Image (cartoon, rainbow, N blue to C red; front, side):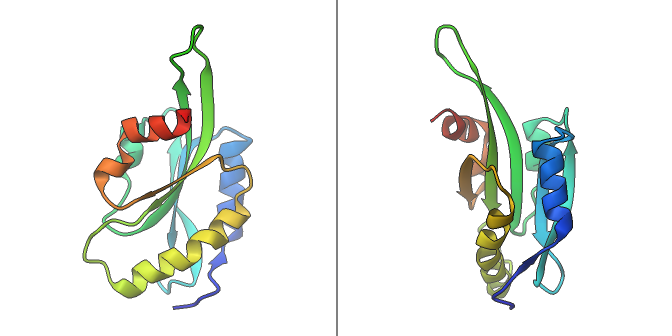
Length: 139
């Protein structure tokens, strides 16, 4: 396991396409097969639903950025948009070495992605349910 995980330039490019270009609803990242570099795994179309995003999370660790939009209960209601960083590390039987590599790479990726508003670490499906994300975005 390489302690100094690299972040591919493509990760930043696609993040900026999500953030500034509004080309995607979300981007999912993963470590390459050698656990040395973080690369783009999947990009969700702008009209993708949150359920579609969750369906792309694997039984292995992943990083993701989701452009989440929610409406407050204020009168009048207001629209809130946040870029949410999600560290998905499911409690599965993936190798400990791989889990450690993902944990070590998290900060390297976050440092490259300027403009993140919220962060979530999720270890089980209930922690990435849309109701949980909405609570975090609105608080």
